[in-house]
Amino acid sequence: MEYRTLANGVSMPILGFGTYLLQNETCTEMVKYAIEQGYEAIDTAQAYENEEAVGEGIRQSGKKRDDIFITSKIRNRFHGYDNTLMAVENTLTTMGLEQMDLFLIHWPGENMYVPTWKALVRMYDEGLIRAIGVSNFLPEHMEQAAQATGRMPMVNQFETHPYLHQYEIIDYCKNNDVFPIAWSPLMVGGEVLDDPVILNIAERYGKTTAQTILRWHLQNGFGVIPKSSHADRILQNKDIFDFKLTQIEMEEMNQLTKKQIRVGDDPATYRFLLLDQLKEKK
Image (tube, rainbow, N blue to C red; front, side, top):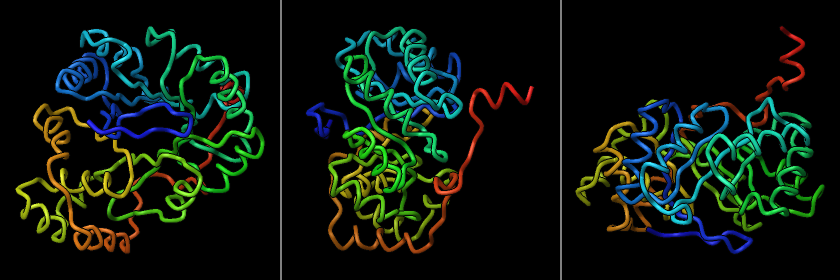
């Protein structure tokens, strides 16, 4: 396994196991299996509603707590200083943990995230979280969070794949020592897995297109968190450290971003209701 040293010196695996859409016993079994097969990082979120199952999978794996890097994210409705403090404590309790390795703000929303970031900074300073970061943040969001607290996010997890390489965010992260992590690294829906350019490159190495794409992410400086409920794919997604793409091949894949296909929400426009607003609607 390879690692990235975050801005505060914490070491984070660059390959993790994603748990989006995994639920109940299936989630527990897949998390346990992934860890047994050598995954050292597990990614979840409050919005996935599977933190308890993820925690159980980690326990059933038999691995020492210090050997697993665990990430979760603040649910959109819990934005705000007090709500964030409560939400992080709830996650720790639900997952049976005393400390989280990484906690992220899941989405910025609009004029919501600074108090939330201040709460994460406090919990980081108190030692309840080893590293703090954001997800789906644009450069202006990261800049405002840093200006308000003096703390730049250590991680930004956002949508990126060969059909959507977001250079503005990538460049900002690189210039400010923010570790970029790709969610949907294989593109939800799988269209990119049939791309002829990638198929041709994959064939040269005797790899799948998924393995080739994950390798492309790593060589671009990204962390990746592919998700699968299939044992064979979980194994395949880990088998990406024994080959290296050439600069020409990297550029061929970089050019595919001209398609500009987004499969998730756009952080610039995505909005959501907070907990108090949801209560008012009932």
